Image 1 (spheres, each protein chain N blue to C red):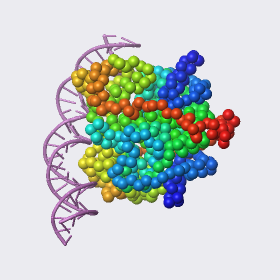
Image 2 (image 1 turned 30 degrees about the vertical axis):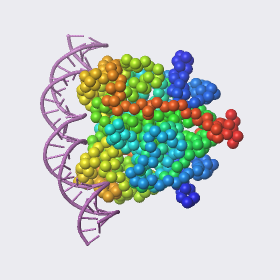
Image 3 (image 1 turned 90 degrees about the vertical axis):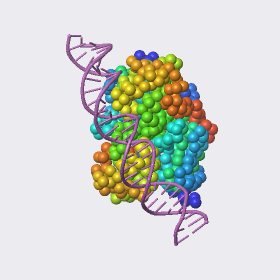
Image 4 (image 1 turned 30 degrees about the horizontal axis):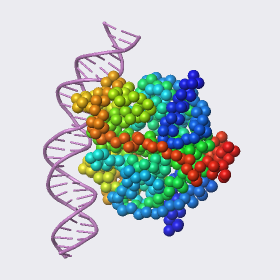
Length: 259
Length: 259
DNA sequence: CGCGCGTTTGATCGCACTCAACCCGCGTGG
DNA sequence: CCACGCGGGTTGAGTGCGATCAAACGCGCG
């Protein structure tokens, strides 16, 4: 049980260190964070509106989504979360929930107290910057989704989403060369793309008949990666991030110890 | 000239302290930030793609937008920035530009070096948290836009945008009781809502004929605030933020001095 | 076996796009 | 002083993408 917690936190650290340089001491502090496991059934909200959160949710396994909804109850998926994502790290600084979290499949999450995260961030400026950076990367993904919904027709939207998910799964170590698991229903894909499930179905079919990709049974099988990217007008630049070191001279911890 | 810089920075500080508690020392450090003024003509990009930014842009006056564009050159406005907004504070932690910045009207901005911002954030954890929180508030606005584009028809989208801009202008001290200046063309509004300018025109007309609001000559005149909010399914919850104090016990600066 | 969920397909509808023309106010230059 | 260009707004006619409504299918499961 303790090993599982450790493994989950290591995944979180791996995600951070893929983007920001953290030294040993900082990594150890993160791995020492308290966390409690929670299993969530499929189709369940696990962070609800109007709540004031005290914990952030680290996804170990499954597929979850942040979503918004209109007064008439229609849902829009804001962002999909895959294993290793801290679904609502942002809640540390904005605890009032404006966009609930929902499990698309059975998922297991680890709840980490805001207090502990704030403490680590306060002690280590590089960690604070890494958290901030993580949030802005997510914001970038949302921004691209906005472009996707605002300016692309259904085929392009779907192709773009599939490209993005492939790259995100690849980043966390999943083998995506031929195919990858993406257990979202056509209904849910529609909720992410602002389209109806019936139209998703027709669009999936169109992409298959174009020889680009097959989406079936929760598995995405890519026939023509180049073609899919151009169909979705996909430029991975917003996902491929290089390492940034926030331990810069003149703004390092040593300076703080002096103050 | 020095007064103007001071005034611009005070606006930035005001924006931060509206959401996060900062003590005198932290405020003084922020007001001491270096900044250089830059005037930007209308319809000009002032932060371009592929650049690696070294400065963040504080908007003193005018109307600017962060936007994305497809391969075919169509633009989607991701977010509008009004005076007092730090348009790309996020670039401190994600310096690679993925979404350029564009001036919709003649605007004056102040460029603040990333290095200086990082230094202040590293010295004062509460400032780091305030920056992070500021970024997540923006991300929340983008998330709501995604819901807006994905799940609302043209009238609702426009109404929602007008409500949001009214509230945002109100927050920075503009009198919006009867009307407020919003110098965006119908073309640009279309770019923000994922609609064509002709359809914006018809939708503006529809809202006017419904007795809700008039948009003309860069001025938004509201006839029926309640009606406009319900037409746009507008819930200001995502904008109305209470103060958060990051100087919490157990995660305060004193702890750091001890370490 | 029957039920429920997700997928598939058909028929029709309608919102928003496209194409096109025209108006207006403004600035510029002959 | 007027001619002209230009950017933005307005309106009309026709089109098409995606929504809606409806029915059937396949499959896992109790």
